[in-house]
Amino acid sequence: MRNFDESLIVIPYGSRIYGSYTSTSDFDYIAIHQALRHGEQLQVDAHTSVQCHTPESYQNALDEHSPTVLESFFYARPQSFAFRLNKSKLRESFSAKASNSFVKAKKKILLPEESVEIGLKSLYHSIRIVKYGIQIAQHGRIIDWKSSRFTMGRIRKLAEKHHNREQLWEVLKNKYQPVYNSACSEFRIVAPK
Image 1: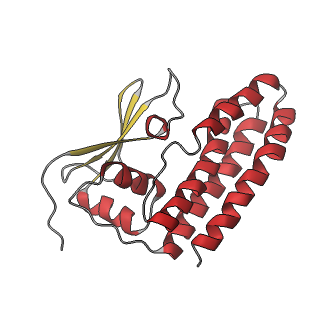
Image 2: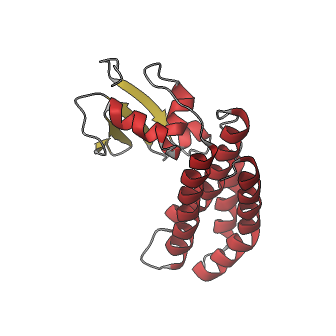
């Protein structure tokens, strides 16, 4: 059993770290402390949310190569935790999350009761997640946090030009599915099973 520091650890993550935030973007944090309940999401105020972990659950998520937890770890490097790269786990975890994001993008953009903005963010995340996975596989860490920041702006500009949801999805899919597929192909090479 590992001994963890008793301090509260708070680590920012999300668009403010990726460089894709706007004036209305939330502040997202991961909080780690023994007294917290793993998996609990706290909404501190209208613009601030906190994902809770115990030290054990955070370490377990690191071991499983959770994209969000790995991003927070490489951003802050909390000393109480250790990461050992397993490229097979990295590929499995990051590929699954990116694929889910791409599918979510289509659903959110096409369905009238869903949020187009969430769909646009999901499309962006599907690409960003794979690109971060490539960096981790190649360098053992994320070396360029803002490598995909312009992608979100470009996605939003396309959305401004297309108000019909079906047309918007076709334009976005035609432009960004090849980008996503290319990144996934590179990821498979640098992070083999």
